[in-house]
Amino acid sequence: MKIVRLATLFAAIIAIAACSPPKKDGVPVVGFIDAFEDATISQAKTGFIDALKQNGFSEEKGNITIKYNNAQGSIPTLTQIVNQFVSDKVDLLATSTTLATVAAIQKTKTIPIFQMVSPTPERMKVADASGKGPANLFGTMEDLNYIDTSFALIPKLLKPKSGQITVGMIYNQSEPQSADALQRIQTLAGKMNIKVVALPLNSSADAQLVTQSLLSKGIDAFFANPDNTVFAAFETILKSCNDKNIPIFTSEAGLVQRGAVAAFGADIYQWGYQSGLQAAQYLKMHKTDGLKLEMVKVRKHVYNPAAVKKYNITIPAGFETVK
Image 1 (spheres, one colour):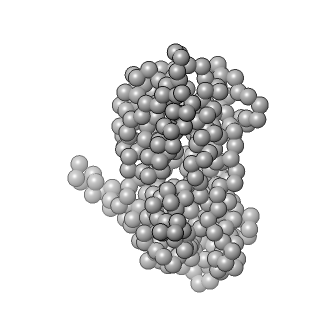
Image 2 (cartoon, one colour):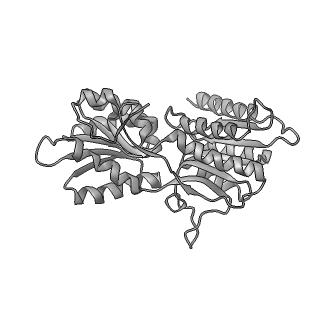
Image 3 (spheres, helix red, strand yellow):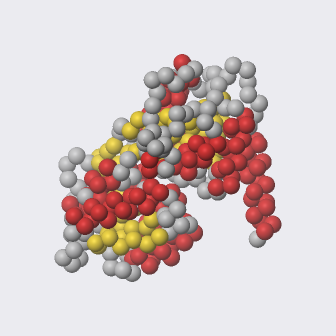
């Protein structure tokens, strides 16, 4: 096992080195960091790069270099990636998901960071005493208000087996946004006469065991909390829930695409695109004047036709079929 771990670490170091070609004179370099591999989250990178292209910056034109690396869920690897980009003196950092954003904030105060799929500085615990985030932090953020609307979909679309709807959740104790979301939902559920049963999941490797334990508690629905562990383990969670005929609701449009019933949430591609527009503006001006963290702008009511059919759920007007 030790040999395997050493081999994995060595491979990660080689990969980081391979993604660090010498900087070409006059060509700006973007260091793009993904915290983990995920089909939904990867849409943010696509949106970010598309925004750069539509503003004249592309590797095909030779006027930008994009160094991409994925930490594959490993904190040590994530730290190495950020350190390498800072050492390379990239022109800007693009960070996808909270872990990548926080790691970048910890390592540089001067290189502009354009975050995506990340919450407010306050929720990431990186705000100062006045509530402001780091001066070099830009891009697009999200708060918890949209979760209220997403969770409120459940009693509108689902009839309880008994008099009270019971919703199951999994949360990651080590992720501030996950714990904050759970607390928010528990408060909201109390006002809506909904019972919430929540179990901790700190590793996607334990997803099947924890999900099955949750399903044994008589839940009517599963709410997919917005955290990295749920994203990484979603297919495992989905299979277990589908086997027991328990529908999944969520606040993330990307998870609806992967099999959840419905959501009101940010379009991950557009989230990355919005941050990419800011990065393009910085590359044009060579300064951050006028740039600041923005709330994500594109949120949608979406549903998955196959999941809706499986659970015989009637979707109201105003919802889009997920693409």
